[in-house]
Image (cartoon, rainbow, N blue to C red; front, side, top):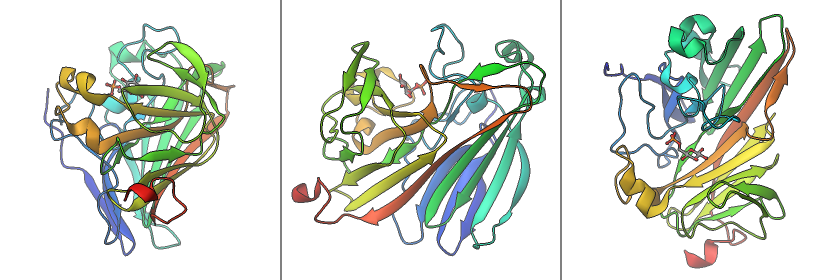
Length: 291
Ligand code: BG6
């Protein structure tokens, strides 16, 4: 195991962030004059061979144990592989960005065998008042392949027990804990360990009365929204998670997972985008009465 080098800093007048080339992993972002939006555990490892616990891990080319249920490492090899920095600069709107690529040549040989396809993954992160992350996967080979992917964003919240997640009302989801299909009714609140994969394409809003803000999460090219909070017992069981830290985080992930993988024929590309913005909590937000 080798300690990871410092992340690349990205900053512009509207916001700043940082990203590790290991995993093309965004580890921080905040709009100018705002509290950090992404959460990283105080116990996270920063070592090769392990994923960073927090920020935005990229799950690819499978999610969790994969659709066969036996894939290793969990969430695919992308988050534990060094990506190549391809480009870095300022876009036409004055926002700082960096672009990283991953091809089979970057992947350790024993892991390459787990996904024997020719591909290029390109991840572009742009920071400003909004965090925008775009993962483009191209099939550079001659056959067709399927893959799963997720931008596994760990959001920093004041108290996960007090946030309201809206945008999922009426949406069906797979409860990974109960192992059954359910339907969300009304806003989602976190009242225990939560691990759910929603068949969902729209916007999600996380209203946070403690921090007085709403995180607005939008996406493109994504059929799945995953919501995860480990709650107390699971946090205690994880070595890279301090016992009470589940109270300060909530994962809202944009992806294409489980029953919704992406299929690419030779030469095709798919783009997954997740963007996060911060708004002041207003009287219309569901959790505002608790503030
Ligand atoms: C979530 C999964 O996306 O990630 C959970 O739905 C999983 O099942 C969680 O526990 C964390 O995964 P990991 O591999 O980073 O511990």
